[in-house]
Amino acid sequence: QVQLVESGGGLVQPGGSLRLSCAASGSIPSTNTMGWYRQAPGKQREFVAAITSGGSTNYADSVKGRFTISRDNAKNTSYLQMNSLKSEDTAVYYCNQWRIDWGPYWGQGTQVTVSS
Image 1 (cartoon, rainbow, N blue to C red):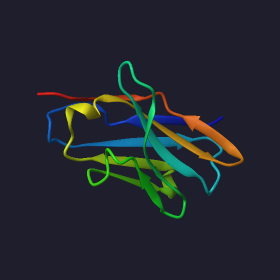
Image 2: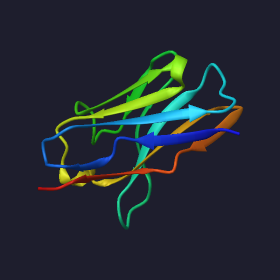
Image 3: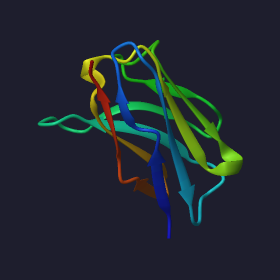
């Protein structure tokens, strides 16, 4: 059984930073893609960032230059470093892991609130 657990969310002022983590446990393939999504109140879940096992990254236009995704393959963990946070970044952030023949598996979500 695969489980993903996010951590690192919280309340931060505009312009501040947070670092989210997503730790996976269970039977994890050596190659997969790790991603982050978010869902604001009243909106659909949207893509934020993803990183392949080879280290290639992709970002939503709204977070380019402010967010950085990274991974630690030995720990089956992904990270989302969020800088210059804005009020519109407020959402529940979800991580996932997948590859074409496995998953996707999702975490339970962590709340990020950007407010003064």
